[in-house]
Length: 113
Length: 111
Image (cartoon, rainbow over all chains, first blue to last red; front, side, top):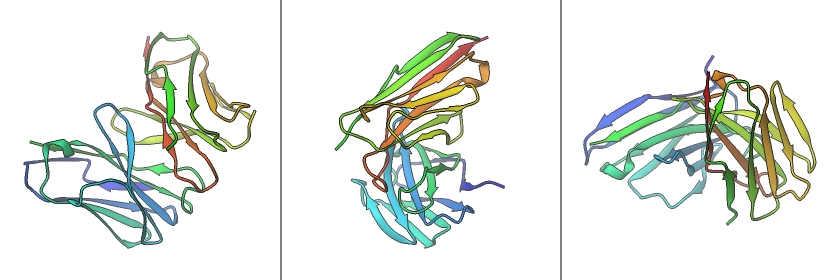
């Protein structure tokens, strides 16, 4: 059983397009996150939701919009994709806020051409 | 905000060698975590540390929570090819505060 699963694993698209990445966790965790890993492998938090409510919103362009239909799902929609959006995006979850370690999905490699 | 300095950035070693990497912070942390990221996958938790001075092992891996609470170390003994990957430290200033990640240590093990 995959604890944190995200789809798709690879996403190649052109500048200006809109795309979505989906994430689901079956751990019963209350909190979910989106992280961005750039070419230098640095992990940067983008958003965090606790029980469907947004609790962290880092300095991320408005083109990025997270949506949490329930506490087991956190999707990421990106409008008007730009070249600089190319990165690996990781979904993660934790028990309750940052209490307890994060469990990561396997990432979505987004390539914008 | 707090910063985490992780070193070295990369390591190239021979199979069987021992490895050591560390993280230092500009502020006091009460939790240190060590993750490993295999190529094409997400980071996986290796060891969690919650007390200053704590020394915890997970197989060939040993991690320590520094007494000053501003650093942590990860050692890998008798490295094997499957140890290849990126190792990340992560820390929390207080229980429930957001995690700060180090920049990662890329480990390459030559057979």
